[in-house]
Structure formats: structure tokens, C-alpha cells
Image 1 (cartoon, one colour):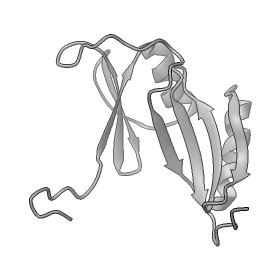
Image 2 (cartoon, rainbow, N blue to C red; image 1 turned 135 degrees about the horizontal axis):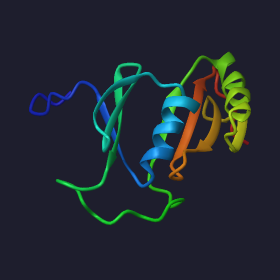
Image 3 (tube, one colour; image 1 turned 180 degrees about the horizontal axis):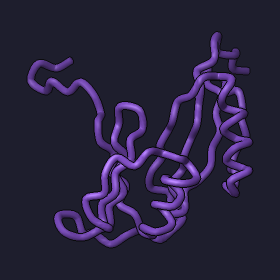
Length: 136
């Protein structure tokens, strides 16, 4: 750790959303993240482990134009236990989520699952698997 920048953790992740109602429904219902607090209809926070995941509409301090829906701009990775990746894939599929890449053991030692939220952000559920498989 740099003593001049004593950063110890990432506590807050803010997604500047394009479709607040759809994004809130997705993270609150589909992902079933517990609501932490709602500061306004334009700022909603969910608790994800030790992190706060906030959904914010553009405006105020940061009011740049939004990229079109479906434009790759963000990837979030959520860690689970190795045996839970397949369960997450099945649960998300049952909840109507389109799985972009099904559970796959990667050569770098992760089992991964990829899908997108309503704004098109890439979401990953992964588990560390040991030992990593050899790269061919």
C-alpha cells in the first residue's frame, strides 16, 4: 500500500443508468440484492457483500451524454463458491436472464458465467477453481 494513498478497499460502485426502472427491477428482483437505501428516485443503493452498488441517473455533478443502451461500458464480477456457479446460471435463466456465456472452466483458474443487465453492462459470476488448468 502506498502510504501517501492509503486506499484499503473499494466500498462504492456507481452505475450511471440509462433505464432506471428496468435497472432497479433487475438488481432488486432478478439479482435479489438487498436494498440498502433510496436517497431519491434517481439514486438507489443495494448492499452486495461489503460493497454498496448504487444506481444513479445522470445529472447534477456528472451529466455527460449516455452511451446507447447495449454499448459495452462496464463489467461487474460477483464471486461465489465453485459449486454455486451452475446454480446461479440456472436461477438466472429461470428468471428470464439471457445467458451470454454459460458456466465455463477458464484456463486462468476461474469458472465463469456471463450475462447482461438491462442497460447492456456485462455481468460475471465467477468462482476460483484450483488448480488452474493448463493453457494449450
